[in-house]
Length: 137
Ligand code: C2G
Image 1 (tube, protein in one colour):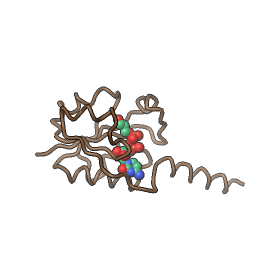
Image 2 (cartoon, protein in one colour):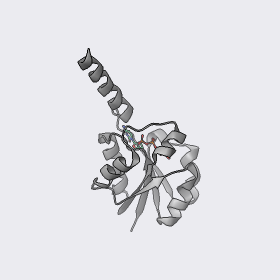
Image 3 (cartoon, protein in one colour):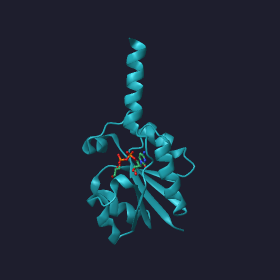
């Protein structure tokens, strides 16, 4: 039983997230997603449109996801690997080589998968904002 772990905010769930989750799950038999809490997003300098509870509900409905746990600190990853018997940590390629993940190679395999081009939560929020402004004019 190969167990996979990934981290993220997963706001405004889109095909880039789904591609990542599907490929991560295909690397093993069980996928744990550590979902950034709203408080941790503040630490990351990110703000999600949907609060943690809603992002968790949506993520738990994705067929590739077996378990969603909270991501509350940068430092919890080794505990996560040990507590959930993780074999592989997977992230999108925007994290490739990051010190936030490279040190985990001592505890688990670390795999970076190519990001899906042309889509991001930020882009979706910006497009919606522009549409609302045009509609309101
Ligand atoms: N992703 C992707 N393609 C996109 C957008 C995102 O493959 N077009 C991947 C990212 O590389 C990441 C995952 O989807 O692996 C989740 O993306 P975010 O929610 O933006 O995650 P991030 O804010 O980078 O949080 O401790 C690590 C952080 O919590 C990662």
